[in-house]
Length: 92
Image 1 (cartoon, rainbow, N blue to C red):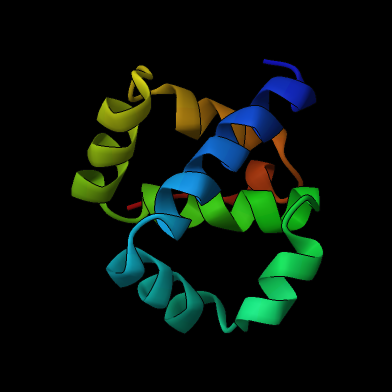
Image 2: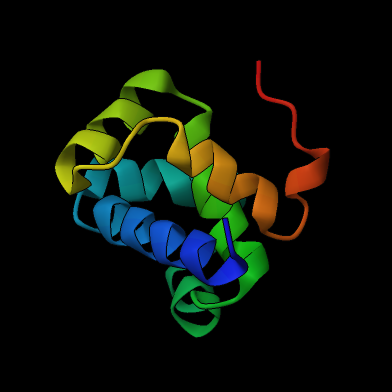
């Protein structure tokens, strides 16, 4: 997967998270980002990697996203490995 494809998946994931207040507040709690920070940095590859990390932490969250955007469930994990820091991530 190319970095551009990984970023597209992460941007879709961010849109999915932003469309659900419960998910969005959980994302802010886990990442420590404030809404203004997210707006200012949403396109940065490091932030997009964090978006995918957030989804990959919870299988139900991941599957809901994949279902919503008609994406194979393994693709967000592949995309995460392409973005900065992804080579270091190990999900349990």
